[in-house]
Image (cartoon, rainbow, N blue to C red; front, side, top):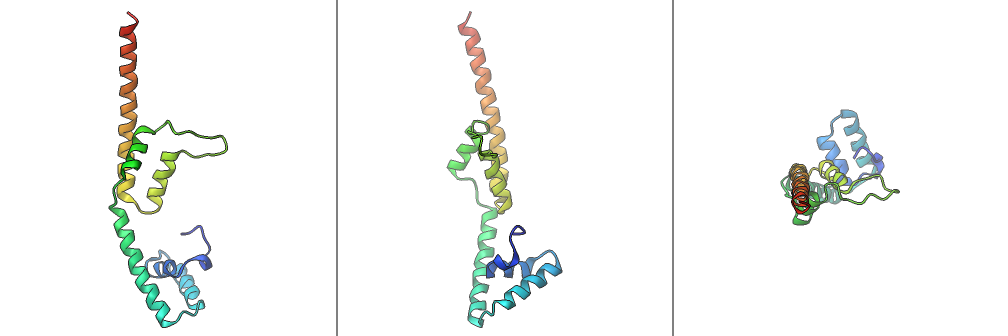
Length: 138
């Protein structure tokens, strides 16, 4: 969350910084911003319950496995992803970075394993192709 200004944080994000922030100065700034919003007791209670849901989703995200579509894309497309000149990213690499950034720990681990398997798969396919082409050319 460090890439956005403190006044753009949601109430839940501010509460997360207050409860789990790394530095005391950031916690104080987040607390001052939350106070500045003049929330009622009902709104604060609602923010607390939303924060609890946010934490539950955050924990659940850590153990979420790759979907079938994600697995296939990492396996078959480790280096066959089109790269237009106007874009400077690679699909599987950007997905992997997204998994790490947003706390999908299990997905990130599985993605790196599947990507290695994908490279091995294509290496074996190329070797088999070369062997077959050698035998067909007597």
